[in-house]
Amino acid sequence: MSVEPGTPFRRIVTGHRSDDRAVIVSDAPPTRVFDQLGEPGLVFYEVWNTCSSPARIGRDDLEPAEERLILAPPERGTRIRVLDIPPDRSDTDFETVFDSIGGREAHVADPTRRHASFHRTRSVDYGIVLSGEITLLVDEGETTLGPGDIVVQRGTNHGWINRSSVPCRMAFVLIDGVFEDGIA
Image 1: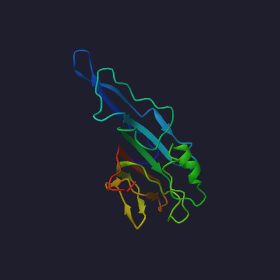
Image 2: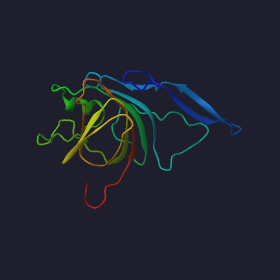
Image 3: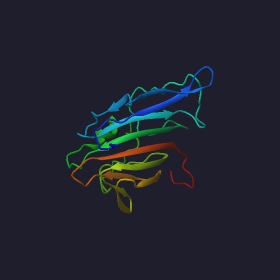
Image 4: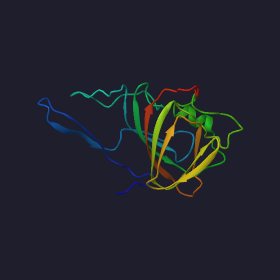
C-alpha cells in the first residue's frame, strides 16, 4: 500500500439500495483535489464532510457539495481530508495560503509566533501521519511526528513545519467544537 505524497488513493463510499441492502456507491480517488494554494507541493484532498451531528444517513446521500476549499469543518459537522505537506520554504506567503484554503479567520498572523503557519480553529482535529515527518509547533513547545503517530489537536494555536527534505502526507479528521472555560 502506498501512502506517499503525490500518489493517488481510493475513497470508497458505501450506501443503501431501495431494498436496504448495503452497496458500494463509489470506489475512486477523491473528486475534490486542491493544489494551487500558494505553496508549491501543498495539496488538499477533500475526502468527505458532514453538515450535522448526528450525521444524516439516507438512501440518496450524495457527496456534500461545497463551492470552495474551507479549512474548518462545517458548523456541527465533520471533515476528513488528506494533505501533502512539502518541506518548509522561507518564501511561503502564508496569508495567501490561508486565503486559498478558506482559513483567513483561523490564521494567527502575529510576528511573535515561532512560524508563519500558526492558526487556530474551533475544532477537535485528529491528525495521522501516513508518511514522512512533520513538526507540530504550539505556543510553548513542539514535537516531531512520524508515520503512524497521531495528534489530537484541541482548538489550540499551532503550526506545522516540515523540516525534512521530503513531503509529508497526513490524514485529518476535523470535528466542529465549542470553546469553554473562557479559552475562546
